[in-house]
Image (cartoon, rainbow, N blue to C red; front, side, top):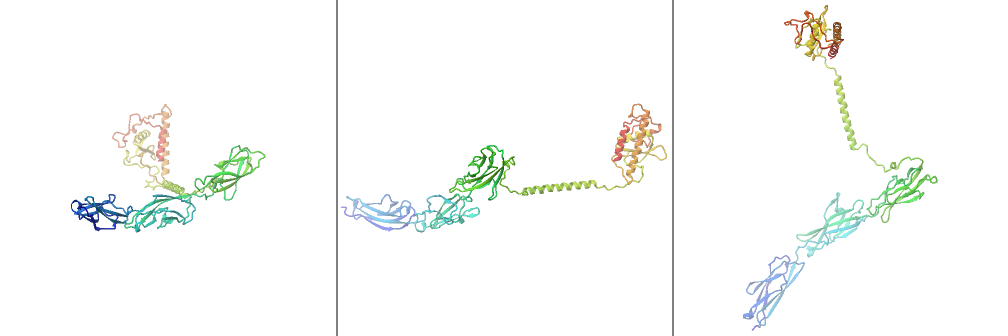
Amino acid sequence: MNDNHPEISIKSFTSPVKEDVPVNTVIAVVSVSDKDSGENGQVDIHISDDLPFALKESSDNYYELLVSEPLDREKVPEYDITITVTDRGNPPLSDNETITLELLDVNDNIPQFPQTFYTIPVMENNAPGALLSSLTAIDPDLHENQYLVYFIIEKEIVNTSMSMLFSINPENGNLYALKTFDYEIEKEFLFHIEARDSGVPPLSSNMTVHIIIMDQNDNTPLIVSPWRAHGSVVEEKIPRSTDKGTLIAKVIAIDSDSVHNSRITYQFLHNTDATLFSLDQYNGEIRTMRMFSYRDSRHQQLVVIAKDNGEPALSATVTIKLSTVETALKTYADMTEVPLGYDIFSDLNLYLVIGLGSVSFLLLITILVTIVLKCQKTKPSKAAPPCRNSVISERNSTIADSTLVSNDAYWYSLFLAETRKGKLVVRQPVPKGARYIVSSIPRSTGLTETSDSAASTLQDFFNLFSFVRECYLNDSTQNERGPFPRWRHPPPPAAVPPEDSPNRIAGATYRKGSINLHVCPPVFAIFTCTILQR
């Protein structure tokens, strides 16, 4: 008879355990028993199926409670585990035992920011120390594992550290501006903020902060054309015969604010004659609406205001005094504009000047050295013996150092033979006689001059010239062909030296009855002068 209930006994139980306990870790050991016999004494044990635990039989009537799935304290901080045992009697009897398992926190969660990218608008001209935003992260761990510290990741912008521009509270993540920002100088900043917990090991995460500086209408328009000194009035002269629609002046203003605030419009604040001039409100051009009449004043005054599009709007004014003249003194292209300062002696110009000066100096030195070398007199060589009508002959001459006594016909033949070999032949009169002394030297060899060389050379030239003239006159009387004959002179018997004569000129052509000279006397005279000059 099934009259005894099964019994459960908890032999061992571990609680609490860390949430990162490994799977199959034994949490508890239980035993079951039933005093009945047969099927009434056989029991079954089980737990709820939705728990991350399992029962495993280790021996007869002994069971182990194991971890079957990873545990997460942030999801379920503790578990109530009910163990139920039932026998197989009819009717069946059962019993149960409930144990509570607590989980210990471990630092297994990193801090989380609600957003990974923050855009924070900041109006320029802000007060230093103003709160910009609160950047808070969340850590689901417990105790020191969820205690967060905030700081700015260091980054330099134009040699300026981010910690000098912004500050963050390390405990609550409040972000502050440490200086006043100017939109015209700094328009945006981009940096990172990190949140780190105090667990072991510490975990951290970061997010990006984009600071956008918003523009304020804090800059007054600046009029750059027509240029004038501060507080002065622009004076212009225009011809009285100006046609309708002529451009008189153009007002140009600039504003360093943002695009919206820097939009400029132009208006007349004062106009002497509203029917005479018109102003374009967008480009600032002032034009004539009609031609000048004799009733119009010669002096007109215009006051133009340039106003930006900010809130509140800022403006600047310029006063233009116009004077009409009978003739055009200058065109609009010649109107006064903003003077641009520049340095004539810039680095590039200075280098060019130095380079040109150096080249010119070197060229001048070269020319002077060349002139000095050309003008320098060569050192005179050893002079020949001072003989007025003497001529030096070289050892390699065909005549050697000998001299010949010859008449005119022999002289012609001698001259042709030696001239064809590139030598110079000079004939000199023999003292107290009607014959001549003939000497030959190479043409490449110059005459060595002494202190009387110039006079001696001139005397030789006169002797040669006289000789040529006499030959020409004699030949003209014997030949009827004209003033420039081919010279055919019958030589006397004594004029042709014998074959074995030592005075016979090597290379000369001797004919019986005539000697052919193919050089006319004028050409010979010119050639002789040229040789003597050299």
